[in-house]
Length: 353
Image 1 (cartoon, rainbow, N blue to C red):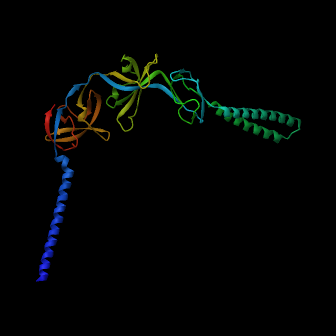
Image 2 (image 1 turned 90 degrees about the horizontal axis):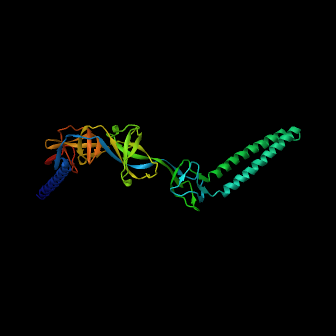
Image 3 (image 1 turned 135 degrees about the horizontal axis):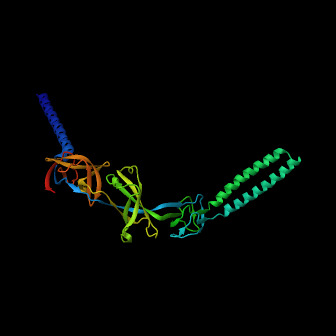
């Protein structure tokens, strides 16, 4: 009898333990299902808009920054002490003009020593050549003297190079933009000064792929510099990149502008106005687009749910983006994408724009 009571209690404990494990597993599965499907079951209250064909107009306005046509960093090839700075920032310099002189006391002495040794070697060769001709010296001594002279001449060239590079000269005609070096300080192979050619300047533009077709080589454009009153200036397209910038679908375009008064300064903000052909297109607000992995997508309304769709974009202006491919007039799309929305999400339309 006692053993039967124990057996019954044991079976009861095992049964309760099994029931506890089963309930725990069931709860875990419910949580997992909730976590994985929660966003799709959630109802998003959204504004939607109907895609419409709009007139894109003829004028395209882009912004960029002025840059010198050419610029060169002056860097000493050999570390040393700055002895003298010959120019000031803003000075105009000619090609080959001295910018900075490095201390060259040691180089001058080494050059002079090399010159003396070469001169002595030449005299020795001349003397031995005469003695060999007279039969008073062996031929091999003349050959040896000529080898020593050649070695000395090579060392002279090295000494002359080491001396010459202490004079830092401008490789182009232009304006001194910056001088980082200071007289008396030691500098290594680092930038000492910057010389810029600003007789012409460049406006550097970053252009979306949909805008690239507007540009052509040597086409005239209008350039405005707000800091100088926004007076229109003539610019010419001088460069269009043949490949997109890494990690994007944008291209670089450069516009050249004459700068006879030198009032256009590198770094100034510039606007470029391009007259293109008038055409129509579908525009959506910027908030209707989601950018993921370098691609753009919209959420298209399909009844009470949305479908994620990749699209190709074009012109961007006034907070709107042209959809070149992937959206047809008459289709409804979510005009402002809420966080967490994904393909197949349930929606409730709050307002149709």
